[in-house]
Amino acid sequence: MFSHVMVGVNDLEVSKKFYDALLGTLGVPPGVANKNRYFYRGPNGTFAISTPINGEPATQGNGATIGFAVQSPEQADAFHAAGVAHGGTTCEDPPGFREGPSGALYLAYLRDPDGNKLCALHRPPKPAAA
Image (cartoon, rainbow, N blue to C red; front, side, top):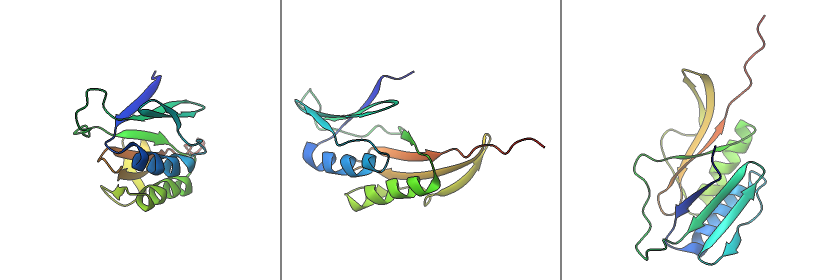
């Protein structure tokens, strides 16, 4: 459905270090420069960071969350820890399982250095019907 997601950042190099570490936990290579942007290409899409082209400061979207699919709770924890270690801040509840209408999900939320809200999401396989 999506070709890419791009977020605005104020300090491109600080954000590159953050996202290189964060997305590295998902096996995504370091960002590739293109003018005032870095692109992170994975097997299922592209994520990018950019200073705003209008010259105004970057701001986070109120109510917006960017979710990254992860393979396990351990990978979600590594994602969260890498983000916090590289200038991010934890938000919402601590990483862990949460029950919802579609079943249990393992979620790990944090904000990047510019306040963009991110989430690592692991959806465990549903048990086979008896």
